Image (cartoon, rainbow, N blue to C red; front, side, top):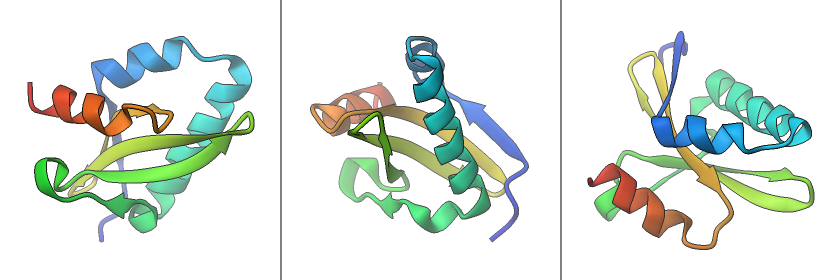
Length: 96
């Protein structure tokens, strides 16, 4: 696998990130760095979300899911959030 040289945030991802507190942003940035170093950390999805991977990490005592896709040397960040309605909202965002 190629080394990740580009990281692109979706508009949804960027707007979600603006609403976070500083310590949550720190945890999110650390998760993105982990993915950039080892893109196979996340679990691949099937069906409507095929090609999308989801990485799970903890932030302020809660589990956060981070959806991303890798294309050649680019990491595209779709969305993140708690498990409740996460996949439904992600599917709606990707398929629109």
